[in-house]
Amino acid sequence: MIMKSNFDKAFSIVEILVVVGIVGVLAATVIVGTNQAKMLARDSRRVSDLKRVSAALEEYYEKYHIYPTSTGDTIQNALGVLVSEGFLDFLPDDPLVDQYSYYYESDDEGQIFKLVSAIEGDTKTAEQDGGTASNYYEIFNERGSEQIQLDNTQLALKIADQNEGGQVIMFIEKLGDGSGTVVSSPNGIDCGSTCSVIFDRNSSVTLTATADDGSIFLGWSGNCSGSEASCVLSLDSDKTAKANFSFIRHLLTINKSGDGIVTSNISGINCGSDCSENYLSGTVVSLSATSTSGNNFLGWSGDCSDTGACDLTMDAAKNVTSSFSSSNLSCSIADTCSNVTVLKMFNTTNSHALLPSSTVSSTADYFLCCSGDPTLSNNCLGNFATVLRLSNIDNAHVQKNTYSYYDYKACLSSSLRQLNCIYGTSCDESTYECLASISSSDNAHIGDCDAYSTKVCCRAR
Image (cartoon, rainbow, N blue to C red; front, top):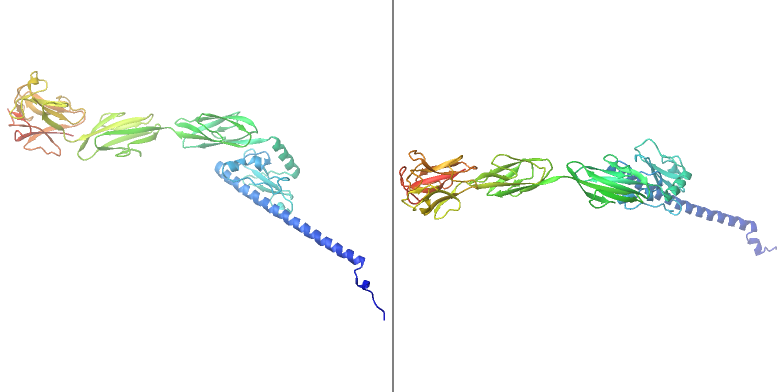
C-alpha cells in the first residue's frame, strides 16, 4: 500500500500567488470605491452650496435689480454683500478649502452672473449643468442670453489675480419717504439713477448726499454713519451706504380759548383732542371752527384772523388760536367795573342814568358792567346794539330802544358777534342776559334786575 504525505495537501506556490493577487484586487477595489464615494459626497455638497448662493443672488436682484458686480473672484471676496445685507448667514467654503474655492463672476451691468466650483467625480452633473466643461460645476442666471465661459486654467489665474488686488462694488441705498441724490468722488456714483459702481479695491471714495426741494437729508447708515452730507469710505471690500431722505414737514398747532371744535379739511386736526399735526411743506390746510351747544365762535388769531375761513400754506410752523364764548353776555351792576361800562347809576333802584362819558359820572356809585368777548365795547359804532336811550348824558331818564324821543344812547358793540336787546317781564336765560330793569317804557327810572317788572335783556351771537 502506498501512503501519501501531508505535503501533498498544501497550497502550491502558484495557488498562493493567485490568492494574494485576488486579495490585492479586492482591497484596491474597496479603497477606490471608498474614495469615489467621498468625492461624490463632496461634489453633492458643492452643488448644494452653489444652488444656495444662487438663490440668495436672485433675492438680492429682486430687491436691488442688479447682481453684485465682479470681474472674477472667489465668492468670499466678491459676495460679502449677501451676508451684510442678510441674504445669507455665511458664505460656504469648498469641502477641500485648501485646494479649491467657489468662484463668482458677472458682467459689468450686473445682469448676468456665473458661479463655478470644482467637480472631482460627478462628471455627469458637470456635463448637464449647461456649461462647457466636465470637470467643474457651473450655474448661470437666466436673465441674459450671454454666458460667461471659463476653463480651469483661466479660473485658477483669475482667482490668483483677484486675491492680490481686484475690484469691489460700492452700492447706495436710499431710505425714507423723501428724495435726493448721492454722488461720489471720484466719479461713478450718481444715484439718481446709477447707484452701484465698481471701484478698485482699497481706493478711497467720498460720497455726498443732497436732498431735493421739499426734502431733507437725515443721515447715513450701513457702512456710513452720522448726519453730515459727506461720507468718506476706504473700499477694502464691498460697501453699502444708506442715505435717509425725508420730506420737510411743518407743525400746525391749534390753541383754543373756550369750548368748541376745530377741524382741518385734510386729516390731522380734530381739536377736540388732536390739536397739532405735521404737514408736508407747501400743503394748504383749511381750518373750520364749530361751536358747541350754548357757545359762539368769536374768531381766529395768530396765523389766521377774523371769523371767516382760515386757509394756511404750510411753508413754516404755524400757530392758530380759536376763540369761543358763551352765547350770553355776562353783565352785573356793581360798585366797580373792570370790563365794559354800559352806563352808570346812583342807586340800584329808582335811579337816574349816566353815560360813561358824563362829566359828573364820578358821583355815580354803581356801574352796569358787561363782558363776553375780547372785542366788546360801549361804542355806538359798527356792529352795535342800543341797550337804552337816555334823555341826557347824565342824571337822565331812560326809555326803550324802540322809542326815539331821547337823543342819547347806551350801547354795546362787538366786531365778532351780533348783538341785540329786547324787553320783557323776564329774560330767557338760555340766550339772553338781564342787564337791568326799568320802571316803564318811557321817561323811566332804572334799577337792577330785581327793581322793576320790565327787564332789559341783551344777547350776543
